Image (cartoon, rainbow, N blue to C red):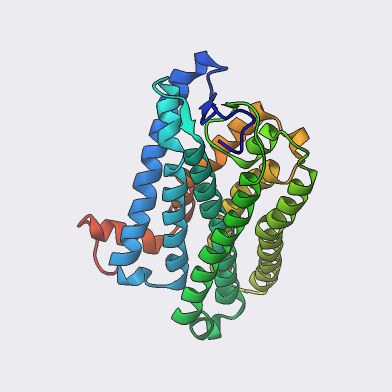
Length: 311
């Protein structure tokens, strides 16, 4: 293919965790369990958000988008990883690799922006409770969701396009899926200019949203501290704390992987960090948002036939 230094190279070999053969059986079992829990938990949230009228609120509208994103981008990598761990097939075509890169980047970038929309929703609910329903009206909610999806797709198009313009050398990818830092390490040419362009795109998608989210929670914390009722404070901190936990897990691992120079990127560490944001975080999202949420638990018991409308 044109992007390789040899015309015969049409596929990659995903090294995955073959460097640690003693870990592969253990990882297979753990990842299969986590993936099953991710599918179950996020699907449950989507179903509940659609079926229960009590969850027809902006918070759950964005949460269902988050769950859908987690389902999709986990599924874009984990099934192939499970096959890889069983040693059945470690090859992936160039086209398949680029497609996986594009899909993963688009979904992960969209999630970054959806988390900003969720932070704005909590800011409106806590800081402007009397005007919350007029601020977070259905039109604005849909506009925020659509903007997040469009922004994620545009970012992915830009970064994937930059990768496709590079000449690549070698056929081994020391990872369990096709991720951007690995492509940069395979480049046969100087990537300084490409890295600079990608850094700008990543800053817009990772750093700017993180700053906006932290800024919104500074205002939320100030508003909560003014609440005289301890019960009210606990409820506000409980809801917002769960969101901040998701943000910390997701952005922390993402910033570690995507904002460091490629020459400092450790392929071995990168694989384990990637496990965190492709498997662990999507599994924990439903738990973080629902364990202390009476509305979601009430909707679940109602769906199972054990509760009443009052939850």
